[in-house]
Every structure is written in C-alpha cells, then in structure tokens.
Amino acid sequence: MTSLGLPESIRACLFDLDGVLTRTATVHAAAWKEMFDAFLRARDGEGFRPFDPVGDYDQYVDGMPRADGVRSFLASRGIRLPEGAPDDPPERDTVQGLGTRKNAIVLEKIKEMGVEAYEGSVRYVHAARAAGLRRAVVSSSANCRDVLAAAGIEDLFEVRIDGVVAAERELPGKPHPDTFLEAARELGAEPGQAAVFEDALAGMEAGRAGAFGYVVGVDRAGQAEALRSHGADVVVQDLEQLLGEAGEHT
Picture 1 (spheres, one colour):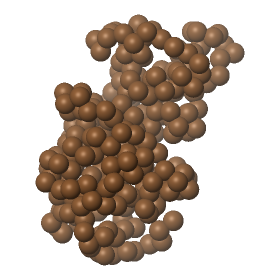
Picture 2 (cartoon, helix red, strand yellow; picture 1 turned 180 degrees about the vertical axis):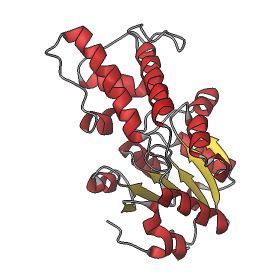
Picture 3 (tube, helix red, strand yellow; picture 1 turned 90 degrees about the vertical axis):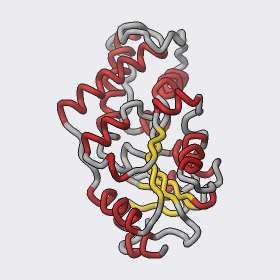
Picture 4 (cartoon, one colour; picture 1 turned 45 degrees about the vertical axis):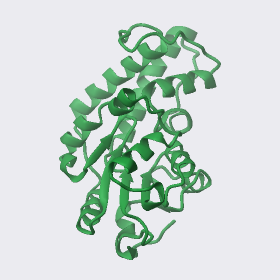
C-alpha cells in the first residue's frame, strides 16, 4: 500500500470531514466564536474574554459533538448552564440552546460561503477507491450529509457515521473511538485493518483509543507536534503528500 502511504494491512479508510475533506473547520471556528462571544458579552459585559478561534477551538470544541463542545468550553471558563433539551430554541441559555444557536450560525455561513473540498484529499480518496479500499466519513457534525453533497463528494464514501447517526445509535463522540469503530464495523474491517484520517486532537485520541492500524494527522493549523503527541503515526499537511509517498512527512 506504499502508493497510498499506508501499511499493507490496511483495508479501510475512515475520514474526518471538517479540516480533512472540506474547508469547513474555519467556518465552524468562526461560528463558535460568534456564538460564544455574544453569550459571554451578555453575561460578563464588554470586558468579557473572547473565544479564541485557534486556541479555544483546538482545545475545547474541535472534533467533538456540538453539545460536548459547549460543555467543554464553558467548563474551561468555570461556567455551568442547565443541560436543556435538544429542541431548545437558540435564544435559550442552556447547553442545548447554545448548541442550536451555533448550528444556526454555521448553516448560514455555509449557505453564504458554500463548501469547498480540499483537492488533494479528493484525489487521495479517488486513489483509495481505485486501490479497492473501503471508505467512510466519520464526523461529529449533524450537517455532514449536506456538506458532502454541497462539496460534490458524497458518492465517494460507502458509509457515513455522523452526528445524526451517532445520536440514533447512542454512540459517544470523539475523543471516544466508538464512531470510528462503528464505521469500521460497517465496512467489514477490524480496527487494526483501518486507517483514521483526522485533523483534530480529539480525533487523534479516538484513533489511539480504538487501536486502529494507522492514524494520519492532517496538520492544517501548525500543530504537528500536538497531533503526534495525541496519537498520530504520521503527520502531513495534505493527504496528497501520501500518494506515492510523495512529499515530506512532517
């Protein structure tokens, strides 16, 4: 499997969505910032400490299910809110309400800006399909299917385990490995036969916890060392670097 930069034992590829396949990580970071800054300003006044779309995003929300991201960031600021219900309106100050508010913002941004897939990632997925490898998307996003369709790459994947599926099957999200394990199971592969492709630290931890055969860290934000320390076997800046072992692994 050297033409794909993977061990010979790999039979399936499990791809994260935002930041690996599509350029939507920055959109999500901007939506989180807009939502949290408005909440913190209303709570603490104009002297509030803003949400950092790099540090706070990477550490507390990236790769996690939406409600987990809300809880994680609020806990970092010593803030506790009622859990609320999944159908809480966006104006309600509950964990679920803030999550709904963030989702409304990100959907509007995606509608305005569209969705762009990383060309190198698309080429890599095509190469994986041509090589006979099974392929799944594993994302915490409840909007995964719409994003794949908007990017024009939905047909490249046989299985989709996203926020909607995870909720239906009661699968805990990243950094737990359960969604990746479910995708491997649906593709008929043992964890040791599957490679995980992730850009989030929570995704690296999920890959390590699931004992997958190979974990590829995609460094879009200058965090190569952090990706390695959280479980990456190799770190690249773009999946195209893995094709034919071209390019330098960082």
